Length: 89
Image (spheres, rainbow, N blue to C red):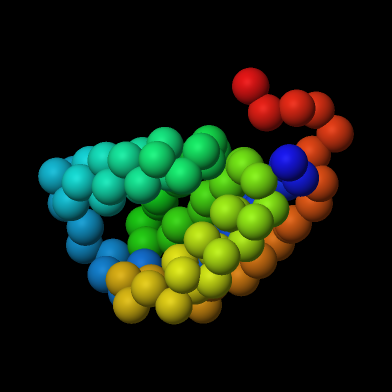
């Protein structure tokens, strides 16, 4: 296993997301990430998204590529991709 964390930011194509839509997005992310063995955090503020993904490099990098092509946001910018020095919990 090659544990990494990847941090990116992006801009939502919609700035008027309702709390229910944000909750639905969060639940979708949690479900998919848990199934893939990925942990992290997703932050949203006034149309800006910031996410940290932690997991095996072979899973995290393809997930980011998929996320970067998702039409629900644009300007996805990878900030950090680095090997983790501590094991995943």
